[in-house]
Amino acid sequence: MQKIDTGDAKTPLFNDPAKRSLIYQVGAVLMVAALAYYLISNTLNNLDRQSIATGFGFLDKESAFEIGESVIPYSAADTSPAP
Image 1: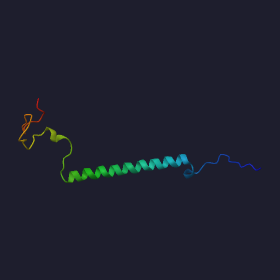
Image 2: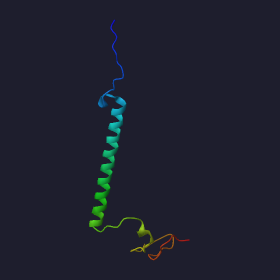
Image 3: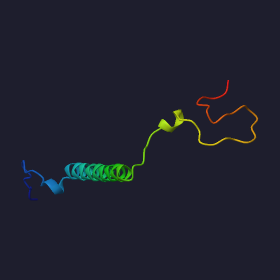
Image 4: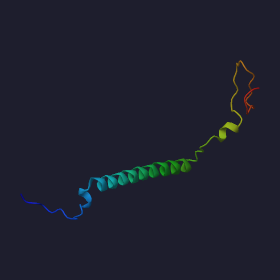
């Protein structure tokens, strides 16, 4: 029977499953981050270009319409819920 000397030979980078999986995971995370950056920056640029405001600032503004029939008292000038 012949012995094969494995010695201290290093496994090539792409033949080592642990290193290869780490490289693929880092690549996948970078691709997801790049896609998220593209989508967010594109959305913000388009909203800015079309002068569309985002956020919840509209909740503090007066309503632009009246409700004809209501169970509770309501006015378009109300900015907070009725007591």
